Image 1 (cartoon, rainbow, N blue to C red):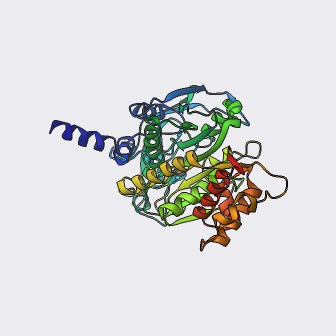
Image 2 (cartoon, rainbow, N blue to C red; image 1 turned 135 degrees about the horizontal axis):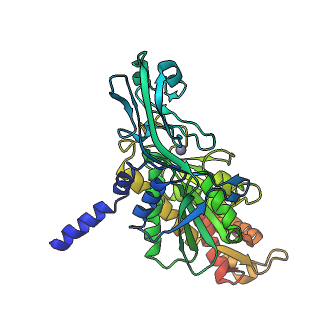
Image 3 (spheres, helix red, strand yellow; image 1 turned 120 degrees about the horizontal axis):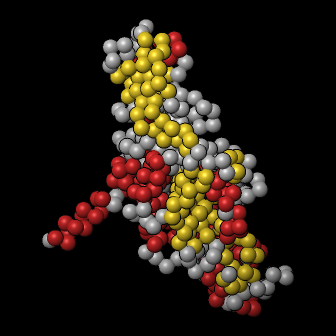
Length: 433
Ligand code: ZN
């Protein structure tokens, strides 16, 4: 009986949603203690290595910024009443605001206020990382109630030389070739963007840690843009091992899955993800690479051109709560997070078992008849397709094309391609790489 209770509590504590709930209140940014606190919670789940990179360090064309920390921020009216308070919602503060304390009239204050007139009940999420500024974000309804007055503004923040912090977990497999998964950890109290991605990857890593894997896996939890730039700058020697990867974000909402392909468009990952969607029977949208979005922009920069895509539910900027206080714990649901984890696990499983063959007779077509391969397919109603599948496999089994890729090129069902591959392998015309 006690075991059952223990198991149940472990399950709920470890659930994808529970992790989002724990992380939600923390005010994160691209640097600072919010990121450290987040990573230290993740360390309770997986053995993350935490890296600290000094402010001022050159990373590719960028420089690691000063570290930002925030303790308190509010606006009071002349009666001393707090009308906006960071303690109520950390989105109220323009993220990376410099310290300020002083009196200000309404007109000057308005230069530092951000609202969403089209969505008057929601607080926008705004940042000013690379230009020193201060400001507050509020609902447009709150904004319209502001009267002529002398306001006291207080922001108890620091923006000083420190570090950029990120987390990394490497799970060695039989091969040095690795799959890279990344999620950004720089957003404050926003759930879908991107605690959903953080939680799905944390649980995916836990799953992989319990298995023997053919490939090695690397998980990076990094601040958006500057984090991937920093990671890339420091890990260029490892890039040759990256066989595929995914940037995980927006995985807890009700939207259909969206896969944004790698810049290459025909990498193994691009085929694997499409195959998984079809296999699981989930509705999905496909998008070709565009140089806008999340950290896949950096991973797919022309000099790297890594085979890394972005696998989300709703895509960035396409749901009304995106980058507002509406992206909260009510927007995401446990079952959507679980469904996303299932897709990610299936991607890993498929990648682990994806087959590449080498044609042992690449000079001309090998003679199929003398090997009994025509007879093997003789009475089959799918004989013609199977024969075509053999020709496709023979021609494209050059080490570059997986069976999944060949299925896509040929327009034949994967099942048929797989069957043809087995027949050719049995007759030693091709062999697995
Ligand atoms: Zn975002």
